[in-house]
Image (tube, rainbow, N blue to C red):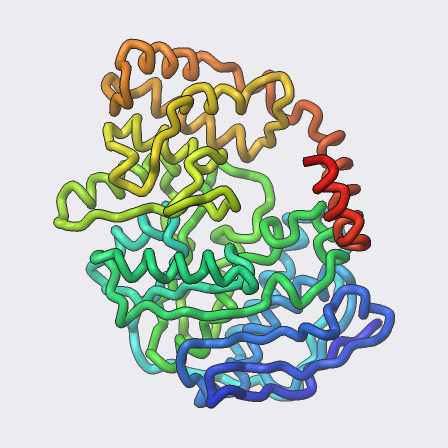
Length: 425
């Protein structure tokens, strides 16, 4: 079996950065960026973190690759709770991916029982609907909020990250003294070969739940955080495999921590209702940030699928989307119906999201009027009557094949791909 070995963990930049020195057999080097080894950079000194906990950020990202590729990982020491959690997580990914031969073992010299003093709460915070809604239900716990640069926003995209921090600073709802920023190349330390392991969906289908939670142990240890929340993005109604779910997130544990996949019982339309009710009862206002599209100006791009669905959900709740960070396009309902034309490729996941909004629309008598109530009511009725079963998965294989070809071209020949894009434009 091929090997990946963690040689050393070093605290750098006055204790703010954890750098990992590792080596691997040449047979698996195609999966790793040798010039961009994995690291985590915090906004404070975390150098007191025990090495048995400091290894968790790396292992949370390496072990899934080990399981899917099939190589063994060697380390010196590890937290006992996390070591046992990895066994459960490996079994769960095998259930999610029954056609994949999940292999790869973890070899450890010393297993360390850790205990974290404290009962503080934290929440991974992206500024989107899921995390904001989770915050409203956990607001009385005054949770630490942790945002990760390198997850939704690329590390090189300093412009959007500065905007993200600026928007956070403007939100009176947020306790900025308990808002921490973490940077990690968790989507850049591996090559495109890893993306191919899960139909170009490695981050979504496999990595992101373990990866995001995995950077938290140093902050958890320092601040006595034992109750950790990650906002759910779906409900039990969704049956396809996803990298963040109760069976993944709630088994990502270390020391005496407890992780909650929060809001799993709520549809996104329910979450919109909850946020609106919270804001109406409080003295705060908030600006949701649901997309990171390049075309975004301000809080959201207002035209992508996620923006459209959130805007429509707010409208059906009777709320003015402008108060929540959106500028509704003049052709909003035309944009909605373009999602369902003959060229549409709709997955089961997208169908579920739109179905939830259809059911919400059918359940309400009143809605927020953008301009013309009669026209908008007719458009909503037309939306309710759409048969999504006729659209779902149409042309899916063709689109997947084209997407795969373009992805490989972009990764192998970036200059040629850039030229192709410019010529096409």
